[in-house]
Amino acid sequence: MLRTNSLKRLSAVALIAISLSACQNAQNAPKQAMGTLMGAGVGALLGAQMGGGKGKLASVVIGTLGGAYLGSEIGKSLDSADRMYMEMNAQSTLEYSQAGNASSWKNPDSGHSGTFKPTRTYTATSGHSCREYESTIYIDGREKVATGTACRQHDGSWKISD
Image (cartoon, rainbow, N blue to C red; front, side):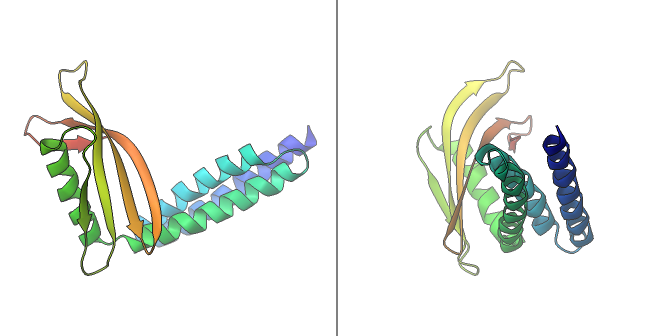
């Protein structure tokens, strides 16, 4: 019982400290702050899954801090031009590519690149045409993969929701 309470308290303290650090940087670097928070959350979850017994507390703390660092570095690395290339590629791919066909983007200034691939097309209960997708981003040799859903809006654009 004491270990569970200690684990919860230490996890809460670590997440609050990371959150406060991210808030301090959010005004000047929102992408880095968001990456820090997301990385910390994922790291904490992975640490909790991997640790066992007496090592569980250390695994959560190490996972939280390691995830926060990696998330911060990835978030810091994507600039507005990278996001513009990525968004233009996503909109075009969602509109014109068949499921399973990936298209690529690359920012020649930063060297960052990625792919966007629709994986399934369906009609939502709202009547909107929707597509599931997989997106891969390459930053300084590191790969980040994300999946989600995008639905066509009334104006014809695609809104990514996940």
